[in-house]
Length: 163
Image (tube, rainbow, N blue to C red; front, top):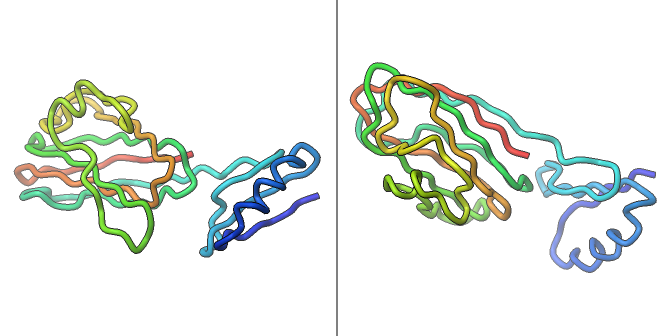
């Protein structure tokens, strides 16, 4: 039996009741845009993936923005070409209507990760032109992630995945 539930206000009680019978059926929860945000029983939330590409990062600017609602972790990898980054920031927002909040921006955020930053390949504020840089975020309760960076005509390319 496949039960689809669309999230609306006041649905929490129904969801709690459905979790008690989840072992007997597959319950999937969708947001108002039709994106699966949770599941109980046999169904898993589909992984989201995408690419990162910015051919000319100079002053602090957006590198990538991606929607991760309903996903608990997000993994990002990227390379920097032509010149190292001089700044790297992670911003998040809890819902579509809210403003972005700055989560991480200084070297120690990345070299000694705590809280919502689960790990990083090193100091991303000076990510160089050799190797692949990465970070893993706890995005439970996050709607969107925005990456910002600065460099000197730095070319950024990479991938992200959220599950």
